[in-house]
Length: 475
Image 1: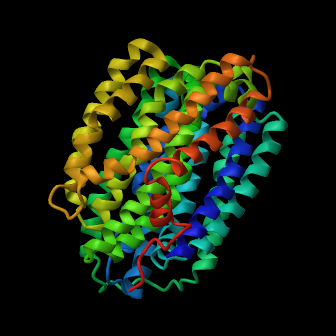
Image 2: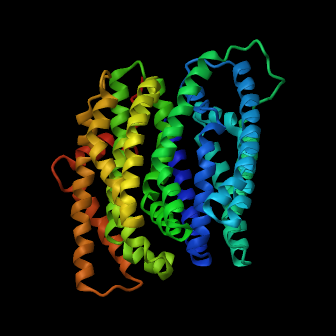
Image 3: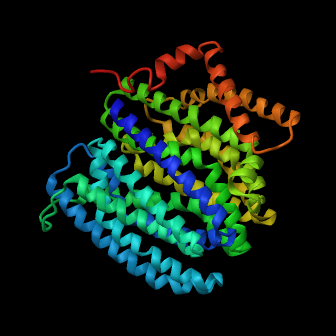
């Protein structure tokens, strides 16, 4: 398990570094409206992206028994689904272009549709790598794909491709990643056996598809609403603020979710090891995401001014408004681990349906305040739903919701102490190119001291930090 975790985080560190470099470079080469048009297209294609895998990645990982015949049939199932979704997007593209009044939008959506066809061919190969905890192999594929996509996208942007540079990045990444995953997984595809029983997997997959649709509406409906009501330029600023503020959540939560889901699924019948691993994994999430979020919240102006460029100044207020949502998500990310590893997907579905309706209503109400208003609405909804979500998730399980919330207490307190240094330094010195690195170094030192010097901090690090001890006790 240690190797899996290390591989996942090594991959994500590499992916984070590459993605950050590509994002910053493209932000300086392209206009906010380019990101806005792409944001609308990506949000529309995301409406079907949840169905590309047929909800069958999670069941494959969670299933205690999976035959090679079932896996082979699922490969064909996902390939056919990818083709159907590609055709559906090609049909929808002209309508979307007319609705948003953007001539380029239809062409961009049509191009992104190719990714569904390619991704459908490799969905189960990637799921198998996760099931087998081969995160090192998956990491190599992901980093290689990012390098190739980033290089070509930057070259396209420098040549004046505009929004098409973003399309190049997405498509090249999808093609390279899918090709490498298929090769590395070494799955031998045969003609599907019509007598294979897929009913249990498909039932679970159907629930997962519904849940992923609701998850999409929770996290992408704001893009559709902002783009339609306020235009591509406003969406460009909103999506960039969203991307940077939630960067810690996505870059840390994604690899951690893969390891946590696979590991907790194996421990679902062992309460004590399950709780111990869950606490350690959540400590990683909150211990890394919370300080990064708090730092970005205060230092948003310096990040925009010296990293993205002055043309992105409207994103500062939006990013700060999104900070509470990002902080809450560092904790609620564990809810998915619990639901899925314990086979409670249907319970998760009902909760997601209710929270999605509340979230969409909050987005609509926030429109009166522009993109900043939508961002505040998103954060308020996440703060209000934090405790109810924890209670609902843990009810009827051997996990206490209060223990999950308590795990975030020390990282939050240390982050609060550390950000005071940024506040003090900014009042002493005028903003300059040195502001961001100076504040980051001091913040990191004070945050570490907040762990090591407080009561129980050193003990908690020794007992729970994955680099100090194994994430899962030896049998």
